[in-house]
Image (cartoon, rainbow, N blue to C red):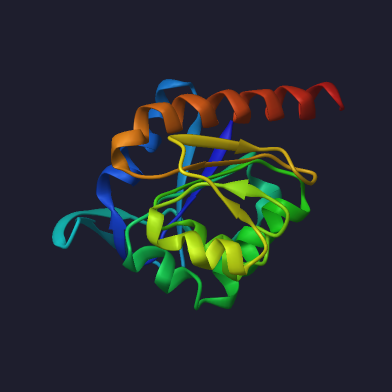
Length: 186
């Protein structure tokens, strides 16, 4: 299973990147760090700089068809930067158009709102995104993890770092099911 992790050059919440990343690796998956610029990305522990990570590829050089699934880590600045980048927004939308599963945590649904893919879906997030999600036609719920199967793909969302274990356990099950279904359709 090849999983894209889309992050901006700065502002991703480190634990929301590294914990799901390690979960994908532990599940025999291949995580790939995708960003809007080459080089490295700067992660944060809330507002403090944390580690840097090498970018594997940029959105302009790849597409959703090269991956089985997408993970959108949070952090306040990360999705705020991604939603202003047309290539990043198109990359996210392409996963929905292709019917591939997507997982987003914390503030990451801001990018989903910009991609116009929350309409008719039920999801969770950091509580401050409730109005944005509702205004974009989605239904917001306050749950540890929410799985929404509206449309051709499955969306897994979660609220915050405290929910990470439930988040990655759930999205790994959803991703595995989607990959098995795609393989059996061949």
